[in-house]
Image 1 (cartoon, rainbow, N blue to C red):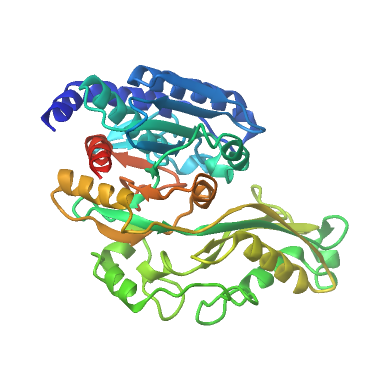
Image 2: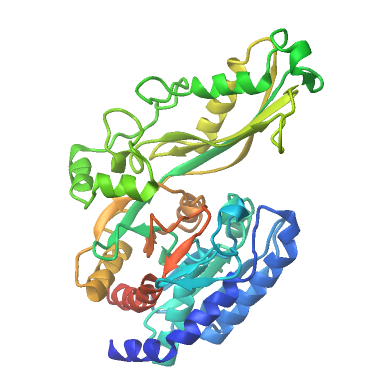
Length: 454
């Protein structure tokens, strides 16, 4: 649609500057010190939705951070698209590894460097600007609702309560999410599934206080040593997870699906070079793409204990801690896996220490049927703007609310992300290509048009 292109080209600088303003707000949901920033960001999202043409926008308070709901209803007889996104971001730590301040966006080499630039401010904001484009060109063909939450990065602990209490408000025909990635802009793809998540924290306690490692070393169990051994026991020599029952409910991918994944462009040498590693690591018998898509995994996200300050301190610590997450595939339950993880760490603890294991948050895996109208509309939209067929792939990340939306609202989800796996999500120097940002704004109106036609 030429009218869309003309409007977007005329306003592209303003679109970008508005996004940069959002990125300057340190909306870190995991840290209580940013509570006021979360409120400020929610207010900013509300204002931008109103400016884009939403009829009504409301900020809903939750037991945690606020949620922003907006809508543009043009005709009850037309289909309704519910856009989900999140305005909260990951902590920027460690700050010393950033090449520029995380909340002072920097545009360099055609990329926006800032925390949240891709995950998910840059991506959900594409939908806000797509709405404006369609409203201003009088071409909106669907009703649009927005649910932009502030707690995705901490597991969406209050979203279920909101969804269950507001089913009529959120009633729609499809959920559209841009919080995923493509293989590349040369090889556009659509995620047909995301993995679930189980996240726990383990605390190992030995003596009742920190001890002198010379006086007591060799006589008392060191919690860090014990914790390291416990973690090491979670994988065997083939990098297969050893926790009893971990794979019981895994639905194995079909031969046909594995062939389809193998057809996706992949260069192992480029993959290793980008990550700065000499060799890849993972479960024996599966390719890297399969390990990050169709297989469950167990990862250590953080470990600490004892003295970590400058210089030396010869201490035998009283405690050691670890944060551990498992990514889950279809038919696995986060509740079941969390219970297995906690039970495992408690059961293997030697008598010289005590172990406390607790849940942080979790979410269920989700698969999108490729024969649904929503998926077909997304595939057609990408063909419209890229001139190429989208490759269906499985994403390795997790979006905890997917299964919740389908269960409570009775509708399917479509993932139409424009990020890249190399965008340093959750890492220092997160980035988002300007090309991707503008390509998303260009493509999203095509989705609404195609979905309305179906």
